[in-house]
Image (cartoon, rainbow, N blue to C red; front, top):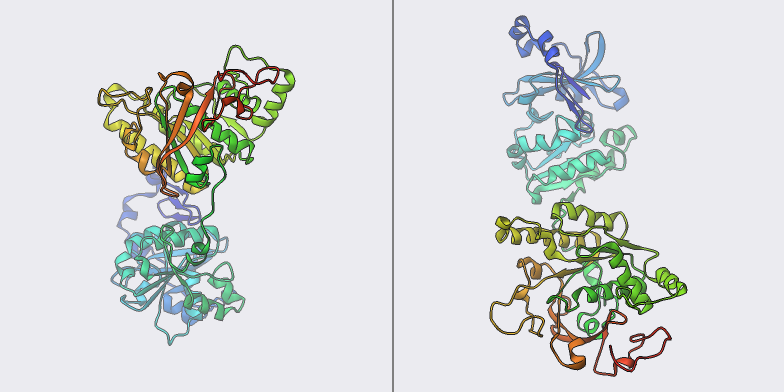
Length: 539
């Protein structure tokens, strides 16, 4: 923690700062003090001595302007800072208790030691503190050209120092950040590296906490090796060909099996980190399909699931999954089941690793996203159902519809996509369709769906991995009115699109299962009555 002469403070470790109070300023600022020049405020008598505990010679201290003196009766080490004219304009006083005091005009000061180097050289090493700069200079073989300096304010202020002296730093061919090996030092090194041209930057790694500790322990060669072998900095968002060598050797694997065989075949299953969209007309069964897949992921593959269903309450959502476990539609008023059946379904479907977001209605994305992130990061959900995306903008005022709706969905989809990439969660999201612009068939009459029919924004199709539509003619005759077809509108993993599985719905079980034209009663666990006998009719 540095204490400045005006009473303000700054911690070089964590960045904490305090401003002087008005009372302090009033007592300390008077006419006689204002007349005193900053040059007179500085300590004039410095003794350049060997710092034995640090193994730094007197010659090195004299070269950099680092000496020993007294301040208010206390012994201190003094680091001189110079301005662009080479004049001493500030001093940093270091006391035995590791406290600091800044004297003079620190704002005009260059980095520590920068006055020794004119710029434009081959190699510049920037250290985190004055002692480290002195230590590196002590260890350095003078026959190799190298500029060695230190930032003024430690790791906490390093980024600002680099930004202020960027033109001078950029004049060197290679810039090496030799910061401490603790968390603060590593973080600061990478933050500073992002400011300088990437092709110039290298980051050194030392076997001890910092350069001086290496010097004290006699690891001079390790210091030099760390500088010479400092690896080129590559921003987090850029991967080198070398770093991709082993990654690219891995063959692409199939995803987890789905409950719909042809959809699984065409997509090669579902993988972690993917974002799937499901769409259909009102009442066609898109929510049922999404829950069938989530149930399959939870029960068959033992994955924790999180359910965010904004058009229904938590009980209804949970009953959907209990219905699938019992093959009895709990959302029907005519359903009956035994305590044993319920207990078994509960243990299978919702007892463990099953999380439901308890809310109904629209929510702003800035409110919803933290809750989604919490379900993934805190609760460990690997599969997330979001039903539905369109409701996140339904709360907008009428005047905010249109461009704001598209913008909101753009931002929301970007956040979902980023969450998938960051955490590996698989998101199954429902999105609505726009009303048809012509007078042809409606979605409820079996109209074919295309990507351009998604309601809201181009980001829906652009940022998703797979887009699945469900089509069904609710006005058809006989069994066909309860048979839907899956249409794959987008398939980034394999590129195979078009018609897929046909599904059949049972009011008795509330399920949508794969159907290929066979007798519905031949589908296992489909139409089962209370006596566990097959019905004579499909529904």
